[in-house]
Image (cartoon, rainbow, N blue to C red; front, top):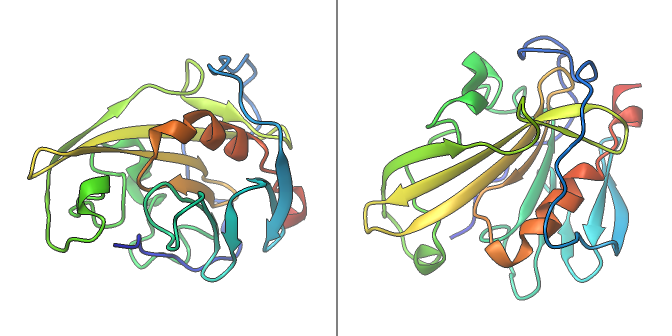
Length: 203
């Protein structure tokens, strides 16, 4: 089961609940140390580091696939310029969906656990957000901007659980999204997201 890809591009600078560059504070250290073998890739002016042993696709945005994954699904990282603008429901910007328990997807009703990757029709029972980032839920990127970092734990109807992570710049309308986290790459997701630079995209 592949996660739905969204179109890429650049977006409006309106919306969101605060400037991307105004909050100053230390980002908590991650354990264990994040990988340092990232190769810069680009989509629509957004530059971001890709792990050297991951495959990179650039159709409908940018998708980084971990070793052994042939689809942009479980474990993958997606980068969406113009994330909300190109989404039919203006997700994740509309009504600050990224701040809500059910804001983890455009239509948050499909189980994405590892055991259901080849199944259709497994629904979702509930979801909750967990605190990540600094005290305000922000993470600083390579260009100095700070995104809203969100983490959801989703429980499926069959009892499975999976994790979703999002880094979102509402003014730039750029999202980094892991729709079904593979826990062995937890620090890799952080390193990739933090390497993002939207300077050229916003110029």
